[in-house]
Length: 303
Image (cartoon, rainbow, N blue to C red; front, side):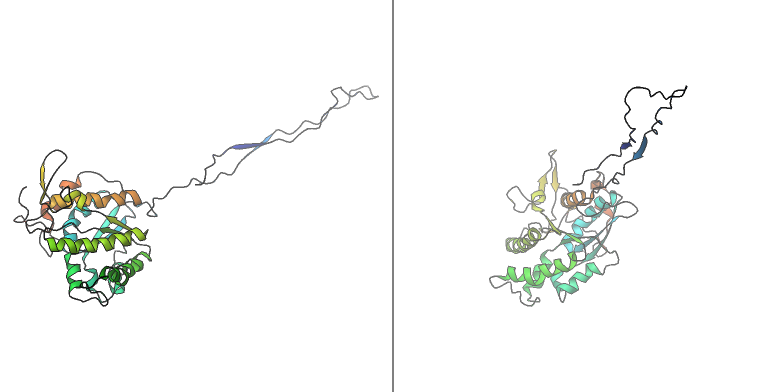
């Protein structure tokens, strides 16, 4: 880290010659003139380096005039998190968002999937993605060449043929990726499938500085990591976090996951997170899921 030097004054002194200490007397009647006085010292300001602003790890400090541009990608699970996450980001006054219905493997190639982000009119700087059971269904239908989930080693093939190329093409543009792990579902078979997908995303994130994986189970699963519809808040209240369908989120589940997803935005871009968004209108008024609320009241009754 460069040290900043404060501006100082350097005194440049012009030296005078040394005399003998005695007045010289000439043969004339008047005294001889003494040595010419030295000019006064001159002061020159040293040139100090200009102050340097330390940038956050994300590369810049977003402002209201130039907000951080965030694109949210995913299917029904992402659309459950999105209203809360958008509210938290936009309340900072330094972020703007867009979201798209997106299943990564449902595109003809990783390049085609990457273009959803790289060619987006928002010109995103950050992509938030959550891949859910729709990703598994595409893989299970053998729609991805070279990836057969019925054969051992399919995770390696999925990683090298799909996920790594997508991440590389997105991050090569300078974008960062925030990957939300799929929350544990209630169906035992789906638990195994989603855990296998999460393992791939986790490995890719660990190997790539441009990708941050956000774990979601610690905030909406049971203490042992299994599925639960409700959790207990720090003040002892029972909160419904999952819908009665055994998969999707209710508002409090979305709020808890969004709070975790906001952490890298504060850390890497210095966004000033404020409270208040947690109980906003997004809980009841959002209609982003195909024109309907992502939290149907019949599926999200009080805990």
